[in-house]
Image (cartoon, rainbow over all chains, first blue to last red; front, side, top):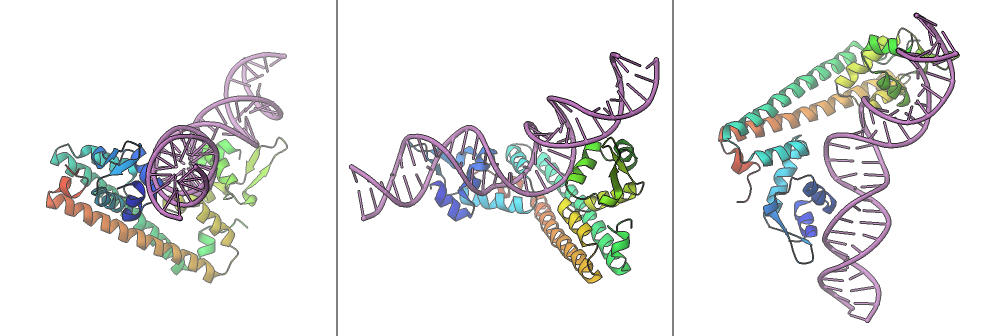
Length: 122
Length: 122
DNA sequence: CTAAACTATGAACCATGGTTTATAGCAAGC
DNA sequence: GCTTGCTATAAACCATGGTTCATAGTTTAG
């Protein structure tokens, strides 16, 4: 497939696919160059990009995704450790969001939005 | 107080304080200029910056904080609506994190990290 | 054969949240 | 009065995640 076909199938802009390649998250085996230097993709690239999209949607950064690709060769224990690390990060983020929610809910229920929040010194 | 004193008291770099001013989140009443053009701050700036830090920590963007400052003059109903909007965003973010956590936990428990995640097509 | 459509590249651009740098004025100690 | 230290400004720089642009080669349809 050519890049525009991949773009349609994976629902990602052509520019993003080239960007992902530049960022190192398109494993070599999914792409080769034809004699014109055009990128030619394996059909599996579409499923692969779905996984990438899911990962991005789940909050993984490009760097983390690259780390996971690079980590495919490492031990199951190591892979599990990396995933657990991410889960811990997620839990920390959840606690922070919970705090934020409580803070905002309290502001609303106290009815003192202006005074407690960004009320000016006047 | 001069900017470096505020910096120490509020535990924010001098550069960040100037940046916040440029971004419009330092209300005028907290600062004036002395004859040398140096910034001179009201002592209340420290408490104000604590609120800003809390807000940033809670996930508010600079733009949102500016919006809240600008909104201080608007009705309580409007302020409450803005806060509720943010709470809704937080809940959406929490649901996303929950999904991510479940996804990762399932990967670990299934023991198929490589195959299901970024396993290469090989 | 020519023009439209698609591909390639590198570089510039956008937003976000700052930090760093370059250049210069001001201030206080010795 | 001179050095050190603090202040000022604008502009450049960093990372992140892309998008857009300029320029050029390729391919395909009429």
